[in-house]
Length: 448
Image 1 (cartoon, rainbow, N blue to C red):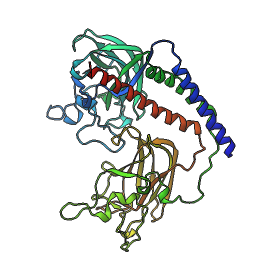
Image 2 (cartoon, helix red, strand yellow):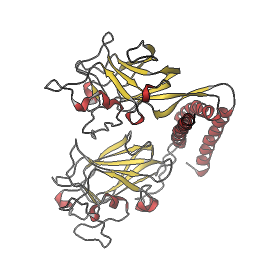
Image 3 (tube, one colour):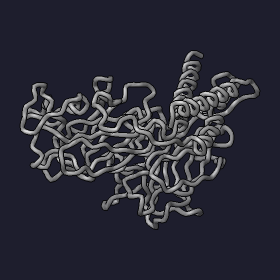
Image 4 (cartoon, rainbow, N blue to C red):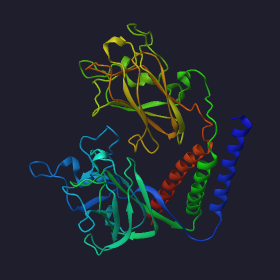
């Protein structure tokens, strides 16, 4: 793609954004949309009032890993990364249209709220293939007591995909209590399970911020359709060889940092060894086997050997706000330890998140690295990211550690679909604008 055509596509995106803003700011009538803050989350004061049932263990007791409260605890199953104490919620039986499974939720202080959407995350410890995830469900509300009377809002259906799915209502609904009714799963005859349940407040008003949000949502939908038809361009990498480590969007030299790590090699007092810290992954320095580098950076070594059910991982932050679009990762398995002892990373996964370093996470790919200590470029579809998680699922045979020398992420194919990238950035900005709108409301109520 030529420089002129890239500029032309970008200009189209800029014009469409201007049209969206102009449309949103045009006063007409009260606009309606929904927020970005989960108002039923336990962290926000929400609670689970009751449920039709919970999974029991062999002793007949409720299995604490499958409790109904797991639906609002914010702990998510992300592929092979499963919280030890929160698998999601599961029942002891399969639901049916005449005998659905159900859960009743309340907001902080049992306050009456106006709600506009729900989001369900079907992922649990149950494998997707066995068909226990939720399929058909309905939302009901009560404005009086947790025993009803109940009013049906609408019925919906989840696709059997391992990702959170959002369902907006046709108009705002007043609710003091919300009841989730599950009529079917994806085929299992034993139980139904669900990972997370979220509720979002309706945003209605004729103020400029609400009108901008509603207008941007409508125009963003049009822009996404336009991008799917006209946005794709040729694939032209920015470099023919390996990009420099310091050009990585998470390089320490560019402000990148490690936020969390599963483990780091430690001494006898269980103190992390500085020469094997996870921060060495983004310092731009690679040690040679059997040599002690002057800078003391050996690479990153975990303190355990990875397994499929308990991988080793590192979570890193891209310093720019709201994040960046990435399409390539660089992994250099070279570390100070000899390659022959089998500690180098073998199977790995890269996942991204835009909301927080706790997810929700979207996997961009899994790869098996070749058994040779040299840098590898891993390509994937352009993806918006603020946080990046590198997971090591296995090494080359060692039962002690997993090791890596360097890790970086890049945008090497910026022309693949310029409009897709614009859509991602607008979507992120829209989420931030919604959070601002909700925060402004909370501040206003606090001063009454």
